[in-house]
Structures are given as C-alpha cells and as structure tokens.
Image 1 (cartoon, each protein chain N blue to C red):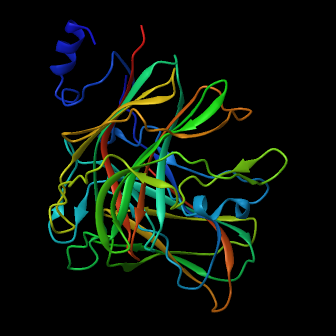
Image 2 (tube, rainbow over the protein chains, first blue to last red; image 1 turned 90 degrees about the vertical axis):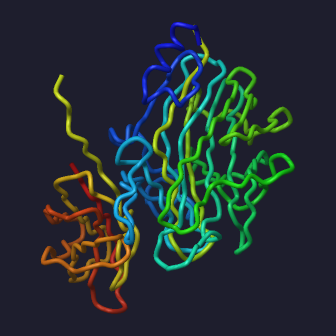
Image 3 (cartoon, rainbow over the protein chains, first blue to last red; image 1 turned 120 degrees about the horizontal axis):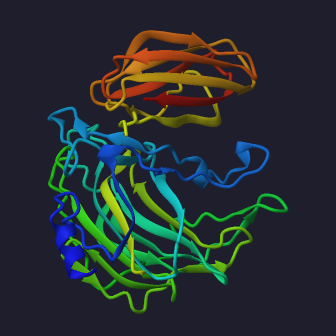
Length: 285
Length: 109
C-alpha cells in the first residue's frame, strides 16, 4: 500500500484497524446487511435428500445483535449487528457461511476479520468446553487444481480444553451423486494437524454472555497457491511448510475464490461464531 | 441514491421430513420490521398447524396467535408477522407418528 493510500485508509475509523494489501476486493461490515454471505449448500441432483448429510445440517447465517437473557444487547465491534453462524444443538454439529467470488488476478490475497464465539447461554455455567472449534477455509481453483486451505481454532474436544490452531491438508474422498455431480465433505472431523507447537489462549471472558472480539489475518498467494502468513491477535504462525487440500481442477470452477467461516459444537448445545466485519484485499496494480 | 432496505430469505426447513412438535432453529430478526413465513408441502401431506413463536432470549419461547394450516402437497401457505422482537421460530403440530416433508422459508425486510 502506498504512503498516501495508507494515510487515507488509516484516517477512516471503520478501516483503520485493518492492514489490507493495496486493493480491496470486498469489505463487509455486517451493520450493513449480510453482504452476500450465505449458507453453504451441498451439491445434489433431483432431490434435496441426495445432499451429503454433513451439508444438509447447514443453515442460513443471520444478522445478530448479540442479545443475551441476562444483560441485553451486547452489539458488535463498531455497531449493533454481526453475522452469526449457529450450529444445531447436537454434539459434533457444524455450520458454515460462504461468500463466493472469483479472483481478478492470481496474486497475494489477505483475509482479515474480527470474530468471536460462544455457546448458547442456555445453562448458568461457564460452558467453555461446549464449542469445539471455529475456522476459516478458502476454496480456490486455477487451471490445474482446486486448492482448499483449512484452518480452525480447536477450542475443546470431548470436554477437554485444547486451544490450538490446526490445519488440514489431506484430501477427502469424493462421493458421486450422478454422472456430472460429485460431493466431498471436507469438514469431517479427520486429518486436522496442530499448527505450531504452542496453544493460543484466546480471551473467552468467563460467562457465555460476555463477548470480546478477536482479530484474524490470513495471507495466501494465488500464484503459488501457498500460505504466506497467518496471525490471530498478536500471535504469528510460520506457514512455510503448511499445505492445503489439493485435488485436480473440476470442470466448471476456474478462478473460484470462496471464503468460508465455520463453527462446530462439542455438546448438545448450539455453538455460535460471530463475524463483525471482514475485509479481503489483494496485491495487484 | 436512496438507501435501500435490507432484505433476506432464510431457509428454516430445507426439504426435510418433520414430526409433531418439531421447531425450527431460532432465527434473529431484530433488524427487520416485517416477516413472511412460507411453507411448501413437498410430500406426505397430513392435516396440521404451524405456529409462530416469539422469544425474549432465543431460549424460552411463547406461542402466538399467528398460525396457519399446512397446505396440501405442492401448495404454499404463509403467515404475515410484525412486532416480533429479536427472535422467531416456528412449531409444527401434526398427528403423532406422521412425517411431512416441508420447505419453510422466512422472508425478512
């Protein structure tokens, strides 16, 4: 980003907390609506029943004011509304929201957002092990491959606090729906590996109705299809040796740039991921 | 350029079979001023009622006077709703031991 551009950018209170690359592909503040974020529907033909059950559980994201029974409206980072992705109240349940665009140039890109997560406050306990994980994934395709970087923050697993960022790079087998349509459930609870050697303690802030917003920044190069950097709050991770799911290019996805946020529950209670705002930038002239 | 009103459609029942007492997942609607809930009966029609429910917190739910009969297979019915606070969900009442396949969509603006 050039000096003058940086000054202009940093003088805007809505944008100043981000550190984007030179071009903004999109900036979505959920005080202005859902901005093209939608439910991640799985592939199917003829009948919705043919959709993979992992995808069938996904529901529409919503605009939330983060309102709670004991303390009223919490609101978002810089307004009232955030995008909320909520699981169903079931152990292992997952939900995801997606924004689908294509890339303008194969160049370095960066995804930044402010997020927070909590279980539904339906019991008067801390519930700090109820939410299994929150994560981000990209779904990209160039001429050769479909590339899917996956990262998640594993908060807890089977009632044990883990607090580790994880990645996934092992390809998932495909299920054929018809002659033309396939599906692969890459959200399955398999093949996650720890990122780095340390856990990262995020500010959970005790009871389920107190919210602290967290910062995430993911860099990925669309030319090399490799991670460039990853940061959560003040912790930076070495992404040099980290790969992504890779499969041969599919017939009609060239240029795809999808960004997905997801959440998983570790109990029979709803788990919720909230995104205040997200900015996706790229480095091209 | 006028500021356009936000509107959105949420799929609350996506073509699945539901039983008596089924409730949709809670949906936050505090930003909206009006809602329409459409039900399309896709398969296995039975006589039944769909109730709108309101909630102060997304956890505790109250029945409302807003309800409709399930439409016959292939048909659509809707409920108009206003003054709903921050949360909405819908409850299905059909005979015990029956399952009806529905598409339920909530239209907000």
